[in-house]
Length: 224
Image (cartoon, rainbow, N blue to C red; front, side, top):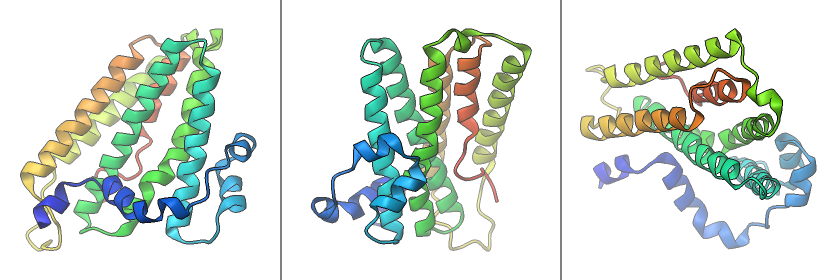
């Protein structure tokens, strides 16, 4: 049973925990979300100040904004599909980053809470990426953009290497580390990063540089 729990993602556990309360939750106020930043939306919609309330507010705001962005891209189905794919992959990476940190530190609810709360800044970045991709500004190239892309590649490669090199110290008996599961997660994480890079392409333009920079918006570092 413990092995099975370790193989579940933190986000999956969090989602399961919220299911019994799904019908009690008020529907997201997407009209409000369209006009407010994530923090203001949370202030005006949370029934309480619990960790779960904060998670829900961040998640709802992000889902509302994602739906609105998709609607605005209805006449550009290719771009909409790319943004949807990137959103899904970046969210999965944030989920795994929380998993890695939680395992290294012996668990804790903070790692699960970090996942839905990471969606709001991610959505802000995706909105900017879509805006760039729809204008000539996104296609402008520069040496700085090329450097941003290269730096993101190097930082992400170092992050993955750090994860691969990790092994708990002998006295860290509290760490729920299972080598096979850990390595499978690292492989999945690396594959997601490569898939994102493939989707973004290799042009040294503003839109591509922004997309690459989002790779390193980690919710937790690869090591403490």
